[in-house]
Image: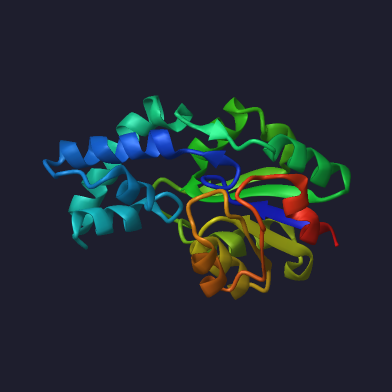
Length: 216
């Protein structure tokens, strides 16, 4: 079994840093900030999509200006205002011991994802870290999953995608990858099931029991 893991909301909880960086960008552009709950809904999907919603705009110049401000704070501070979900280390250890090949597959730029995974001591579990490029290339999970499958010569029929948002599930299903949703992140049960998750972790805390369907 090959397992592709989303990062934000699946392996780590980035709420503190991402919310603070979204606020920093919006205020920097002279916009009012919505509630932290509304800002947290932007965790998971590509950053450009989140700013399009927050700014009520499709203007690429405005969205790119927001992304640039966001990354100013994120690269210096925000990415490490983050924490690994309880139970993740144990679950990854067990999956690895049972022969699963593990890959991080995140819409976050790869340069940031690598630093986060390394900082929080997760690098040893993963064969490779895949993410988008700073220009937005492969920020769509459909494109990213296709890239990982091709680059690693993985069969979709022996591969699962684990994530907390609809984007993860859709990206998996388009390519025939097993779509596995988790509930300790930022997507709801209804969101995951509506997107087509075949299996959803049955509780809101990570434990090895959550991953039993991947090993059956």
